[in-house]
Amino acid sequence: MSLITARGLSATLGGRRVLHGVDFEISKGEIVTIVGPNGSGKSTLLRCRIGAQEGGGQLTVKPGLRIGYVPQKLHIDTTLPLTVARFLALPKRPARGAIPEALAEAGAGELATRQMADLSGGQFQRVLLARALLNKPELLILDEATQGLDQPGSAAFYDLIAGLRDRMGCAVLMVSHELHVVMAASDRVICLNGHICCEGAPEHVASAPEYRALFGTGTQGALALYRHEHNHRHDETCDHTHEAAE
Picture (cartoon, rainbow, N blue to C red):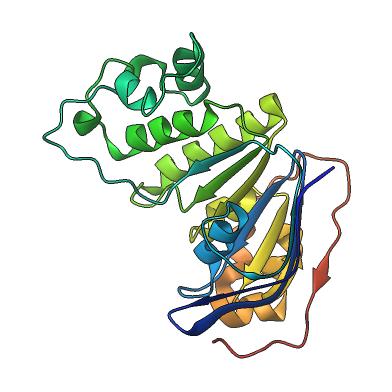
């Protein structure tokens, strides 16, 4: 079942064309990762998906689609006394029991009474994940959600995301610069540089000339941790008419 379908998506920021001719689809239960260099339009693509950024082209969204969003960063005034439970209850308190359940799903069940200002980077990201899980999303979107975490912390976070997908059946769409970790956690990878340069299963993208032109010849090692746990096949496509970076 397709949750979001885009055809010919384009976007402009500050008079500069950031995205053009992007065809994209994400289906129930799959983990899709968007990779690309800085300025390639990764975050813009996510913002178009959630309606925070206007764009051209055709965007079709499943009616009533529930989306959970984990931002790249969120600033909270450290002088403000705010517990985790109170933060998750803003701006509107969810149903009874929803907060403990979401915290438990995010691996942060013990943090409910902690002050937001006292959390470590990893704990803070798990709380943001819990917030995204409050409405039981069908699509979970993460915009470089592990920025600032060390490699073991990032790997643990992506393991958590994979477990959530398996338990909840939600699709996951994420942006990351941590190629070696995020490629291993993905069903499908989209290599973006203003347009889709290459798309497909992780091992296919890692060996594509377009991908290696952007990230270097050593990127084949990005899949050292890759373990494919599914029996179904992935559609693999690659645009071999590589365009220059914009």
